[in-house]
Length: 219
Image (cartoon, rainbow, N blue to C red; front, side):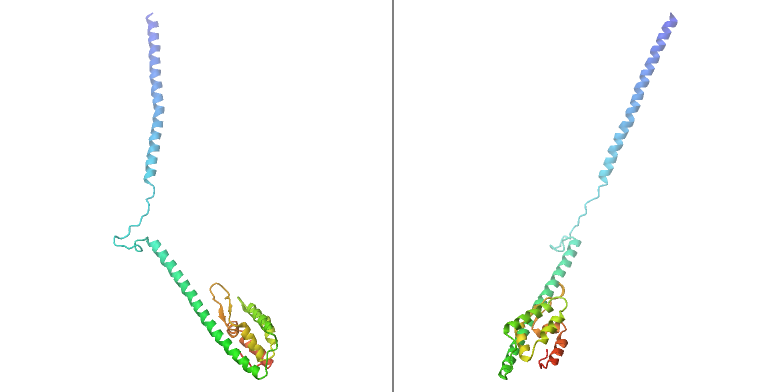
């Protein structure tokens, strides 16, 4: 009987030990989870501290509106301002030279008209109607406008002129025209037919044609 009671007591003791061991084992499971949570919190805290600081520029206390700007902004404004100034000067110079050439062309046309009147008084008159000279003047402008020159068109028109009166009539019909440049950076030319031939390097070929046809006028 005593042995039986001792066996029962031993079983209760073993159950108590097992129960306590189970609680300790469960506690061991909760510890790593707690540790992981703390580690995550630490990583987040470190990451927040690693955020790159914002870059700010502190202007001098005595700076005006321009010197108070960030150096990169100032440099950009200086470069842009210089480019705009140069562009305006370039266009302004082009406009001035165009106006000056136009005035020179008008004087040349006026002188040619006086010469034409003198020829007519000598009995030398134009060979074609005025509309023909107007048409040739337009063709010449198209042939010399922009890049390059259609020399065949120029030569064909020049060979059709019979005398100096025809040359004068053509110069008068052309008047002053503007020939576009070959690119955005070339302003072209505004002037008389003589100036257009000079600009397009057509003076010598045209004068050679006049010589062969017995025409005294020379560009």
